[in-house]
Image (cartoon, rainbow, N blue to C red; front, side):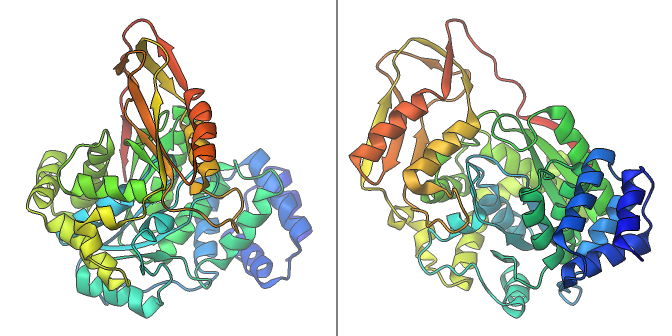
Length: 435
């Protein structure tokens, strides 16, 4: 095969075969196809799309470009979860322990935050000693013994995606649906779970800004997962405002612990119950969403879900007592109260900009090499639809120093829009797609 022929074929809107796609991924990963040719192919895919079958072939070729974790020897049902990213998204810290307490084996490989989006691995490092880089053997052992493991992706998992994503990032081809689907789903397939549940965000703080685009992405991922032999579901959720009330690594861990202790925390508990219900239904443990949610809620109420988080922290090198005493987690030197400057109702909060405020405080990365401060962030006191009065507490800035806090206050106030008349927020759960 010749790569120029494959580029021309896709340029002319023709369908690539499985053999052609496997050749392309194999040769590119191994260095036999140069970046400039793969850049041309990515642009052709962006402009002309791919059929669902082509997307499946691309996904499986990328999955097989490196190690695929074999969890078949472990008893029970293995599940994995993925979020398309957002602000204040701490669902993995709640959902995974919650499902593990129900008997589901949660085998999750997570990532780090970049830009305005947070990363699960960064949040977990708020527990001193927690290792986000464990061996594949340790990963399997933790899943087998405590029903739960959350770690970073090893260098041998899906090397094709690492090369392709870096290329797409600098060639303007990130927004292609087939390339996004194959990037996400190839890593999920390589992790070896039986069930995959997807949290697809839409809104100002999400990668997919419109519900229509989020629905297309979710539908394609569910179809690819199903065709690949995995039970797959997607929940479309709102990200026009941050999820919950905390934005920042240690702050979000504290909020996750509160949810596992039985608190509501905005939409966080609702989302975790919805995602968990999808897994329990697909596993056959529950017959209906209502039954599944009752089961999950009971494991929060009896403390077993919180205990699973403690088991996870301990198994990966941290101190389990930190879960029961979150006041031990990193705390910023300065807490600055942000006061509302007008009367009315909160009409809108620009989620991505709030995420950037946290990043500017030191809680996020502009580049992958940046070192973050786990203690800083934003504690929101009001959400969309809430009434506010001039002089009332709107938020609390957690910062390293007064200068950072003062700058963040002005940046944060610019993220709010107010209304003189009452505001009714739209639905948080937009849609559920079951494979």
